[in-house]
Amino acid sequence: MFESADEEYLNTLFDYAPISLWEQDFSPIKRLFDGLRQSGVTSLETYLDERPDFVEKCMLFNNLHKILRDEMGSHFANELLDLWNGKLAYEREGINYALSGEPVNIQLDFRVMPGHEYDFSWALVAIQDVTARKKAEDYLRVAEALNAAFDANHVCARMGGDEFAVIIENENESDAMDYIKQLEVLIELNNKYYREPELSLSLGFAVSAPGVSLEKVVGLADDAMYRDKNEHHRRRKDDPQA
Image (cartoon, rainbow, N blue to C red; front, side):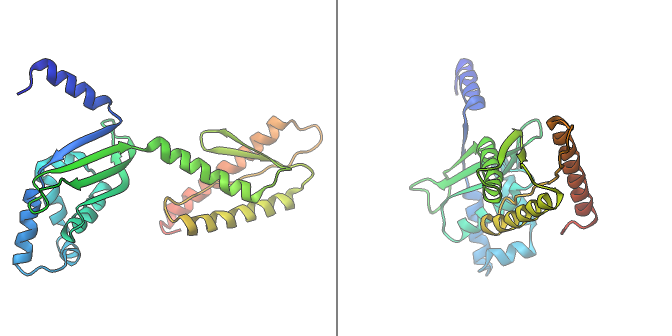
């Protein structure tokens, strides 16, 4: 038993550490695996298709359901498949949730510790918050598409958050539409290359005229972008596969 001061120290260390470490006893899962094999199960993937409740049953051991929630259930199913097939160490990215309920991008590292390969009685789970890194990666992918669509004669800048603006001189509405179409093609190619997470942009433009301020043009372009965004959400609501 730790003294009270030691417990407070360790709890504080755990709360503020950038990586949370969990020691887990996976021997109950190993016994479940052994029982399935003895009953003639040769493919855990097929078994999970028929008995999806098996994943939840495994998560209940050692309160794993408190660590891995919602979308992480599907990730845990893949981890069970790895363990079944003898892969005792792996890394995966996924989504977990903070105590406030906010989604958090995480990197999960799992390994059965040396000397416990036959009973899984000592496993180490490390969870790292990589939300900031994922956001930075997303910004760079937005930036990649813009850099490919426009050249050095155009002014490309991030307005804040995930909003970008491009200023193009001496072009008309038809030219602006051509740039929009080119950017849409580049986004599609980007998603074919990177696969996940899917890059999605709402696009809008405005053309200046004599006597119209830059602020006004930016505002009109912003309005057009939000109309495109709302239309996209409407289409997704009507057709989730769109």
